[in-house]
Length: 207
Image 1 (cartoon, rainbow, N blue to C red):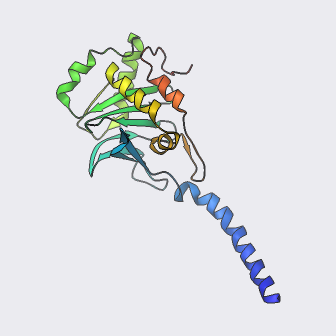
Image 2 (image 1 turned 45 degrees about the horizontal axis):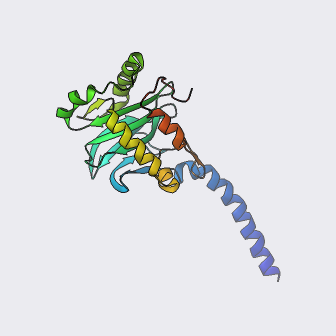
Image 3 (image 1 turned 135 degrees about the horizontal axis):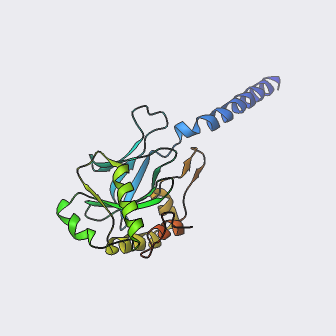
């Protein structure tokens, strides 16, 4: 009997020590490092966040297969919220928290398409359109693709995809606003849809 009491006490001490260590290390061990990017329910690309222990930089890389298509800055103040890849895997609509604005832009590897899409004139507010375009070009790196504002057709496709996405799939394909390993917080679907509104008037869309 005494033997089992000693074993029980020892196990209790181990568990008591292990739980705080797990909580403290969870931002490093359980962090969401990879985000699948889905189009029509199919994974067409992958985004890789920098690990919590990475000393090589703070960029989020987007990969189609083994090839990096582009990177975005990703730190505590500025980070992607959601990326919708179009089925051709040549265009990626990005929703990005830029601290003072929520950017929406398309990274497009088909350079011949760029000029035609610029005629969409979204958003309708001239100042906001210029501001979003200027900020978008400053957060995208390591790419030969063009960075442009989306067309109305692209906004509508991304919005429809978000609306139809089941809650579990939405969380799996979203980037966390805060990631502590055991706990993560995400921006809601309605907030993302506000950023994609065709008549958007504000840099911070839910003002």
